[in-house]
Length: 386
Image (tube, rainbow, N blue to C red; front, side, top):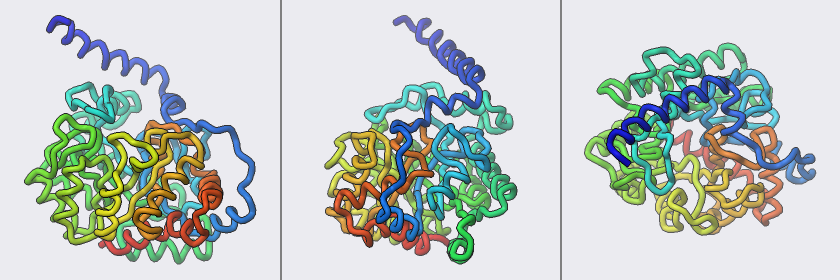
């Protein structure tokens, strides 16, 4: 293709995508965040009892991105407050996506590709300041969470250990109470010197060092170079540990994972992933990486989408969980759905009991299932939060 042809495509492709987004409006998520399985019957009595008796924590969902009113139950996407309550979720980590190339690939992603989040922001009427600044995109979505909590009346934005304890005390008396913890998917969102202070003040307590491509802080498993921590990345890790911001290794390159594990003094997490043993691709973790994260005291959130588990059933997710337990024990495995992350899953958050059922069917002990459902994540968050 000629140079002029490439230049023309650079204009036509984003323009066509923007037109499509504007035309589809809020319905765009109907095509990106789907449930593959038909409606399921109720979980068995044993699974239901285990699920309802557990404190459930999900370490990753991108629900703030799309513009739905999350106070209302929807047939679109995977997460909203009514469905979280139906699924007995106590704490949902809501992670902010700020940039995602339209040509993203788990193998190799060039960041110079047109950005889908810019197009989504324009289509959904985000403030103009978010168009040119990724940090402003974080602050805007953080504001959406504050508004959500104010309108719901039973949602606590968790920023500290005290908030976490307050949430659990309230839930013990009234299951309507929910917690949300704010994260960022990719440190590239910190695009100015004051950004870390700004996002911390806005409530961010978890940051993934890399997302779908390499950035100035860390290499991505899907990047062109796939390098490790840069000097800026090492400085960022130290600052995050000082402040009580959780270090998330989801999407990180093997070199980044090695560098972080050699550097940190507190447990990192992997908010959403699969394992290579059950689904071998660059997105997922090897047994060696699982052991390294567990040795540092961390937890690994197992995702629900086909790239993570090579299947579209609760049984496929349970198989990955079972393997991880076999490698590192039941104290280092957690849930990391990637709900509303432009993925298809076998259930939405209202039917998380289907996963509990599948775990028990896979031979995972009830006590182990309870740890995976939330206790492990709570333990690490309580240690890490300020």
